[in-house]
Image (cartoon, rainbow, N blue to C red):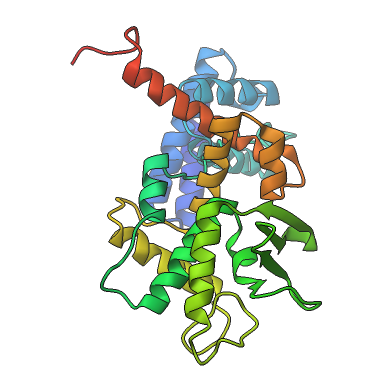
Length: 309
């Protein structure tokens, strides 16, 4: 950094410290960001006042290539942007080279899915000391969420039987669940044998309760429709009782359903239809999950992948 660049940085840091009254730690972080800017400018043999948009974009690409996160780059750009905005107010630059530069988008985290063994362990769990009424209901909830890939809103919207007012219902004879999904779009999904068995057991137990005439398929003890929050809470408790290492939430079972169907069938379009996704791009995230599964199997079993301990 030449003397003129050093002077500009020092003046700006004094500005944010005195006039903007920023905290000392914030000023120190600004100083680090501007040190990085100055180092890049020095390597490019360009004074800070002559830095162009193309320089900034190149340096962002270099930081990203070196492994810096999108969030970290965004913070650095914010510091640089503020510096050049101040230079503009001082009449030292005519445009802000950082103005239209955005950090790389952070990759979307993969949805969490259970292994097949963990999903089966949860589905087959029985609480011998629990309330039989609650046990039958919660077992049916798990089987429907995992066996059909329902959203929790679709699950709690199910009625015990079809009617004109029903948002959704399960046809036990046909082995189908009819649900009202996002955008008020209806779809039908197959219900597996285990889920049908659990539902029949739940309905038999439910019929003995005082609130057996309630419209909702899944109710609380007082007869009111079970809320999504209640399903979250019950599933968390049940997954821990079943011995799973991680608490399970409803959407995790939906992800598990999609991932396991895709692993077995390889039919992305069918998974899209089962999940009720309007765009297949939304469903394609499960191809990444499927690849993770294959990669783990390869690392664990292939003789050329095994690493020496």
